[in-house]
Amino acid sequence: MPVFSYQSELLNASIAASSALRMVVGVNGVSLWVQNRDKTLALKTWNLNGTDQGFSSVESELRSILGAERLLELPFETKICALGSAATTLVPRRLFDPENLDQYFRLLLRDNGPRNYGFEKLEAFDCYLVWAAEAGLMRLLEQYFHSRNISHIAGPLLRSFHHRAPGEGYSVFANLCGQSVQVAVFERGNLVFFNVFYFSKPSDLLYFILLVYKQFDLDPLELPLTLSGTLIQDSEIYRLLLRYFRTLHFVALPSGFHLPEEAKTMPPHFWFDLSTF
Image (cartoon, rainbow, N blue to C red; front, side, top):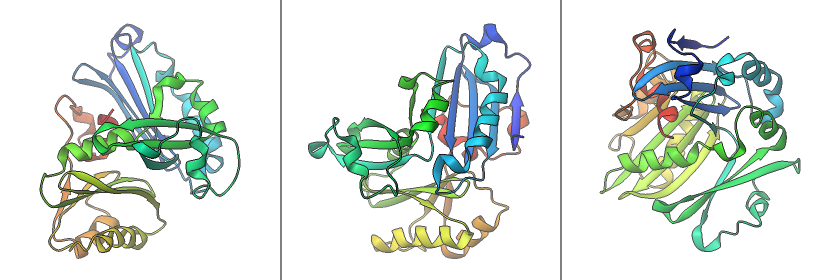
């Protein structure tokens, strides 16, 4: 069952033909947003009990979610899926070789199982985002999305963070999805760090973020932490972060994305990743 589910009674095949469906899929969660111009017609999210073991840890659960979701059968004008947990790395433009994508993961991946690879040019950072996803996951997603419409959430997230990063000094962003967090650091608007961490306890999350602050000699009492994703203020994680960071900011949804009244129980930043692509 979804953690949250909203679907407008107006949504049918005719309306879908002029609407966009976006979905983010990762081992820790799945989320879905249907939008027609600036009106939200569906908004859903599921928690998954995945681990860093990857697709195998959530395959059965994910197949059940996708197979039971009737919205995926509607003829949407656009259907886009972003991977939330595939392995990623950033490669400087001068070192990028599109013919040998697997070479960038020889030290990052623990096994030699079959994988699909993809890449995206990040013009603003003069580099390429390269990702690797298990072949079984890609075969499943391609039952619902054309392969050209499957990418990785890190690209649009980094562009959105970059748009919000000030032109002076440092800025740190953390996007949570269940038991994983994507952390990006910008210096004078330039991306200087990006990584994904998996954690099992709130204290682990705190450790990883403080480690990033320490790496760049940043003071958590002086430099705010900007947060997005599946974090609510009434949570152990948030209360723990408040003990170490003087200022915590939550990102706002971009203009053109409006939540229905039924979704006001969830904070806007909860859906931020879906608004970035």
